[in-house]
Image (cartoon, rainbow, N blue to C red; front, side, top):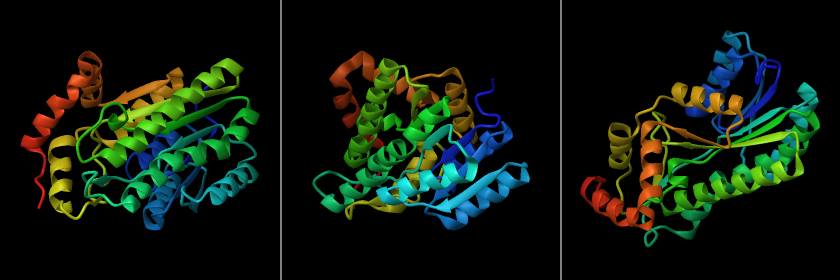
Length: 276
C-alpha cells in the first residue's frame, strides 16, 4: 500500500520553503492535505499550487505556539477528512545571536516555535494517528540539532530538544507496538527564506547574516529536501539527514566528539559575519 496515496497529511509552516515543497510533493503522490502557516499570503500561494496539481486541500492560519488552538485544529482536520495519517511538524523560525547579547524573550521565542510548536503538533495529532491504524509523525529538527554552532545557542537548544523528544517518542512507539512511525529530520543548508526572515541580536547585522547563509551555506533546494524526507518516510526511517553538509558534519561530530567545538569555533571566527 502506498505511503501517501489517499492518506491525510498535515503540514505546518506550509507557506514557503520545505513546507510548501512537502505539500506539492505529497499532492503529486495522491495525499489529501491539511496545510497551515502564520503567513497567510504564502499559504494561499501554496494552496493555489496544490490545487493546480489536482490535490485536495484544506488550509488554515495557525500559530503552533498556541496549544489550545493546535488541539482544536486537530479536531477540525479530523472532522474535515475523517482521519489523519501523517503530521509534518515543519513550522520554524531562526535567530542569530550570542548568549550574552540575547534577551530571555529572544530565546523563549525560538523555543516556543521550534520546540513547543513540535510538541503541540505531535501531542494534538498523535491520538488521531493511532486511531488511523497507519500513522506517521515527522518532526523537522536541523543539522544544528546534531552539533552546536556559535551564535546559534537558542536555535541549537530548540532543535536538540526536537531530536531528543522525537527519538524518545520513537522508542515509546516501538515498545508499545503502536501503529505509528516516527521520523526526525535534520536538514543542512536549505535554499529558503529562513535566514532572510530571521531575527538577530542587536550587535549583529541581519542583512549580512542572511547574505552569508544564502551564499555560503544554503546548498539544497526545498524540493530536494522534500523528496528526501518522503523517501525516508516511505522507508520508515527513524532519522533523515538532508544534504551533503548534514551528512559530513554529522560524521565529523561523531568522530571528533567534543573536539569539534574548538574546530568549529576557530573556523566560525574566521568566516562568519562579524559583529557590529
